[in-house]
Amino acid sequence: MNTKDFQPEIFKLFDDQWGILTVGDKDAFNSMTISWGMLGTLWCMPHKGKNVCAVFVNPARYTYGFMEKSDYYTVSFFDNKK
Image (tube, rainbow, N blue to C red):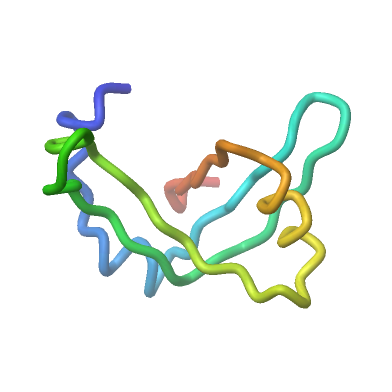
């Protein structure tokens, strides 16, 4: 998905619907629910204009170790359909 096409109600997503943070690789990974984070656009060079997502994980959480070892993570939101 092109991040330019992603236009959610971000406060509603993080506050009301929560998200799933997943980090690791195919051999070892972990997911956890999150209700905090930020989306934005970097303004400084050399990454000016790059879309970013930041999340915050308490060092006491199991997922934190995966975050320390990985360069990438995903944040997923799902609709309420059953």
